[in-house]
Length: 249
Image (cartoon, rainbow, N blue to C red; front, side, top):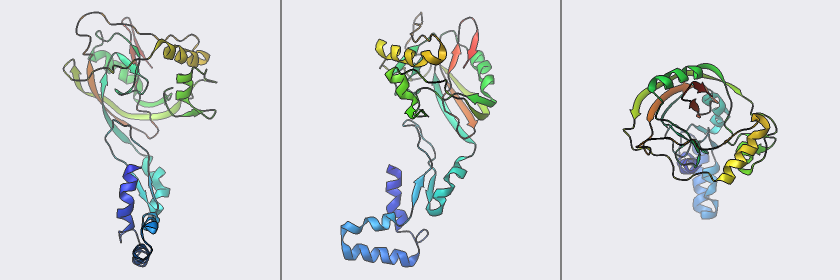
């Protein structure tokens, strides 16, 4: 909305979007009635936005002006492209580096070949379950409230059909990077709350750290993914690569 508020006064003074007679009327009212009526020009044209980006993301914000606000859904129903850097060994409650560590897992054994093989299961038309740490509502309550307050989910999170047109590793960084896992960590009480939330749909979930062994543990493997996906696809990809077998979820 910060972007919208910056654009409003520019649009309100533009002959491209406001009829000349209405523009003259708005300007005269502003001059004649003082600052109390300055909002008139800004509200003369309806402006809306087609969805927000994650706080860490750069990208395109689609703006609808006038009758275009009714077409925002049409513009957003398209193929979207993302590029992201993935860091192994840690899951956070926000699914990015600004969140708190929910749990950690071994990562040194994971190879590029394993990741490539796991990505095969995510290409094409798939059924994707939205993450529990999301604002999607179930029975009027956001999913993240269930997770954080230890409220059992009333039913499994419903999967949605999405299409992943392409998904590829464009750069394998290995340990040669500056990315680090977040320092903030989930407490034992928070982990127990998450287990309780999931217990009604996953049987006996266990949320615990699985420590890595060896040296240089502060620099987990990283790689860069590029993907093209349909609208409605969550930008969350969880890969579980166990030592004995590959498991994707």
